[in-house]
Image (tube, rainbow, N blue to C red; front, side, top):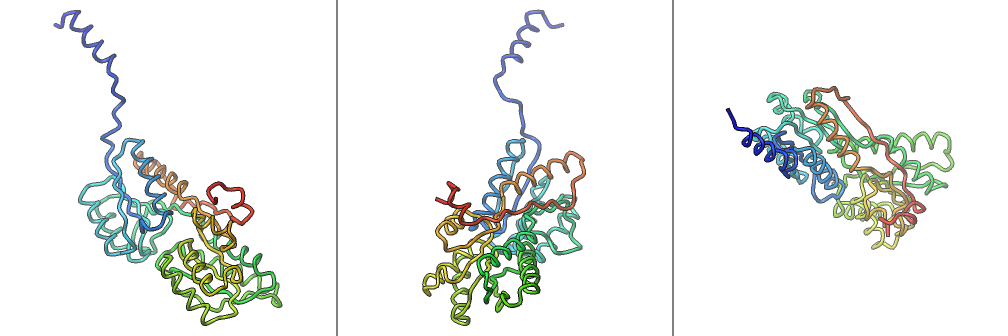
Length: 314
């Protein structure tokens, strides 16, 4: 039997502990983003990691660097490390299916953020993303605004990403609807070229477009990096402002370009909200709760007037 003094000592020892409650031991979560060269994906990764660690998880963050094979190997590594859940921003929406099927076979839940998997045989618990289709429609609204008399426009696309496919789909459909009612001021899509989703390729493709279509009036780029690359090409060709550029994202540099007038407008995304919603979905699933198959977050159309009142655009 313990003496009274020993019981008191044990009680005092337990009561005086200054260590915070232990959150460790919940396990490990893993996220592979498309590329660390795009601030949008870095925000998703950083926010998801912060939310996970705050809740007591270890969080592994890696970048696929736009390399589908590399990302598939990262998923294999996650399975070896016995992670509790995997989050992906796929480098290739189709090629990622094989690795997701491996995770399915291992019983590890997979979630996708921003970019969806287009392989119907691969099971994803929940896809959390911008409403890219509606965002593409907003991009078309901005183009119609920018070109009230119509004109020739081009699209810089990125068909490896499901999100960009949806953006272009929404854009084209809204332009087509506009043209049915405004045939005298029609907006004609004269070219659609792959831009790689990056600044360098956006620059090169825009140069080709300007050379081939000297009367080009507008350009829709599927993200801010490619839009900014296109702006540099237009500036070099002395057509900055003459060719109206619509981007997509709302990254700080894109917002600054909108304030300056080199980009007309952006449907803006909320990567921090995508990340927090993704973590909440993972947490619910691991707690045994049901989560929807898809959660879409609306964009907001961001114009020069918005940039002039936005500290981030200064």
